[in-house]
Image 1 (cartoon, helix red, strand yellow):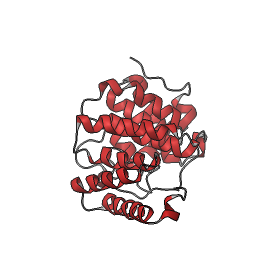
Image 2: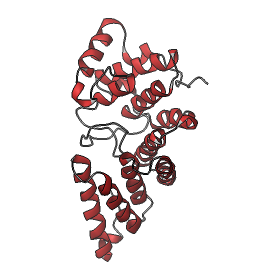
Image 3: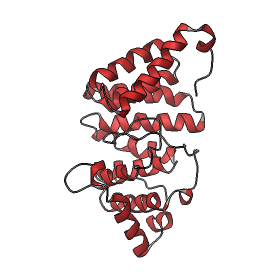
Image 4: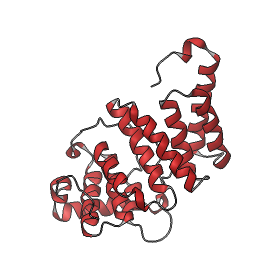
Length: 236
């Protein structure tokens, strides 16, 4: 089944010709970010986040990066950095030519990186039936979280929680899904459950940058539970 590409051509999004090609090469020449072997479009897009991840949630396979300033929903793709414009052009072309699961995930992540949360969610929902190991559902949870935060769509926190839970039913040890589940529980204001979820994440990933963030969330949740005043304070 073809993936809807939102009605915009790759050239309209990313520019044309040799400039786009050269930017793609420069942006993706970071093998340490995606390990050994020939990088797929999906892994190349993850490499384009070297200067900071675009969302609070965790995308499967993304090496830790601190979150950068978020885009608002509906931002024009042309406001993004040229490497990301090139990346979305390449991902759009790849998904149009071959709407494989990998290419479709690349397209969704490019949309997500550029603040096009509705499009990212739509593509991931379209391919969710192909999810064999929970990775698509986990990325979908991250996309719902981003849309909830950017558009103040509180119901998306519940959708993110459901997606993360689906991922964990397929793969209980998937660290990305555990991370996104904990964020979603914070979003639906279930503080005690969020504490438990952060501890569950730290069981599978006790060290590294993601673990540092998890402990920061856990300490914040502990403080809220201990203080009636902070318990009522809005989460940022």
